[in-house]
Length: 330
Image 1 (tube, rainbow, N blue to C red):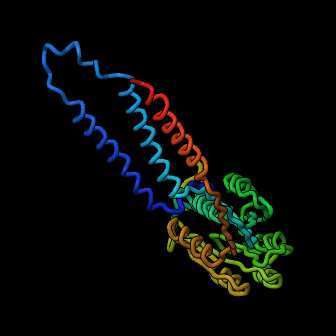
Image 2: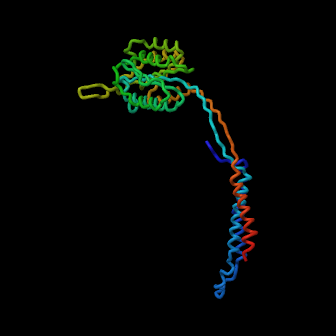
Image 3: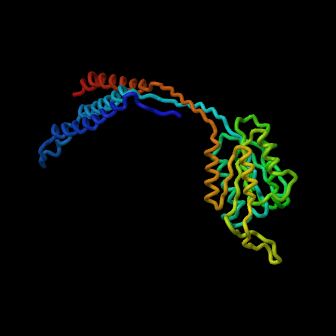
């Protein structure tokens, strides 16, 4: 970043002398040229307006500009270039997101899945120095996006997620195990998985406890989030008349999620609405801070030479003009 600054900025107050000089000159000229207006003297009104008079005004203008430039020169204008050396030690984060049919429940606005995608997108945007990836699970699991620093691609892939992309169900163990496999070989000092689900583990070949043990072995912290209101929520149900919403009891495997977080050194959170979900991601963001070192350098370059040269040139012009052209005019 480049900026023009002054080494002695307080001296710029002296520029107030310039309008004072102009005001004084105008007042003095008006008194000097004051005359009595008489009808018989109209033919002689312009008699005194010779080239000498005009040159006198020009020389005053030159002197005014010279004074202003002199003040700027002694205030010492400088060009300041600022440089930043940023070194980061980012965190590798895998988001493991449940996309089962129950994620379409409307106790969140517009539903659990869309709310989770929106909040996760904001979380990704707020961590530009971290590598992040996305694993989704339902009755089975797959990698939507491997670890990447291209957050724009990750966000686009996040937005494309829909329930029904894979077999329905809730395979928490499979989702966690896949997330672990995607991050375990990372060389980052901090490896984190954020697992979000709204149900009970009811499918998959890998038990959640086994997946948690694997994560612990590789030093991966797992933050688990249970989404769903307390009590009942409107779930989508297929009927002969199409999909309708019926209030059903919310069931979340909180004990399993707490066990996963406890084993791996993470934390369990319960999000009961959109605002609470935002707060949960905000809390995780505070717990997992990237290390950023910023060193700032400044380089200053004096810039008074140009106004000084103009000032000198104007002085020469005024001196030569006064003692040559102005002196020879009568």
